[in-house]
Image (cartoon, rainbow, N blue to C red):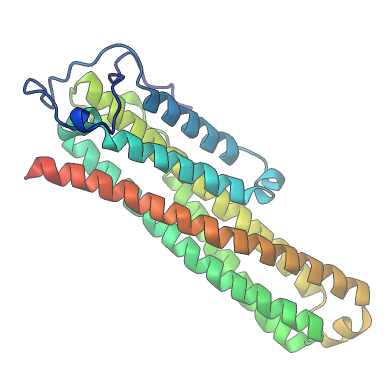
Length: 284
């Protein structure tokens, strides 16, 4: 894992949302930002959320599968903290001189928005597939269960694909990569580095989340396949009951996922919009 960025330069401790703090002094310019060497509480808050997101993403498969709602909550909290950072005039001024890096960040967050949009669609499809499978098991309809299993398999494959795509974006940046090899102010490196770390942490958590849901879907699919024949459904009451219980558990989990994934999707959109507004303001 890459070493953490140097944090010796930070933001003043004035309230970020105070009306007076929104107007920088006349001597405040993008590449000549002078910041005191004491950390702003928002930065410490953001570091805490990055660590929480990474810690969740690095759990084992079983722990991930049992805590997907917690993972979504961690990602949502991280982006709420990013919103606080991007509200700071000092952070906005620092980003004004980091055009190339901001372009890369906008691209990273766009990929994350797209991935979570596809995840929401996959979750909706999976919910319908699970409902169909549960109805088929309860009615002991082998043909309907077989159809639901095929659809569930497709949903699992889509989730696995999303996990692989997110994993490719989860590389944490080195200090030299932050500004694309150019010389930037300490404030530019500080703010841009934090945003890149946040994007990488979000990608890691997204890959873990998508993979965990795909694994859950796959395990239930395997059990459903074991009794999808009409004869098996008619003869093995214990198997039917076990599969129905697993499908009910997955259905409950998906309901939690729907609410959490919607919040994360909105948070990602808000982060990118805030960054785009800052970038556009300083271009024009």
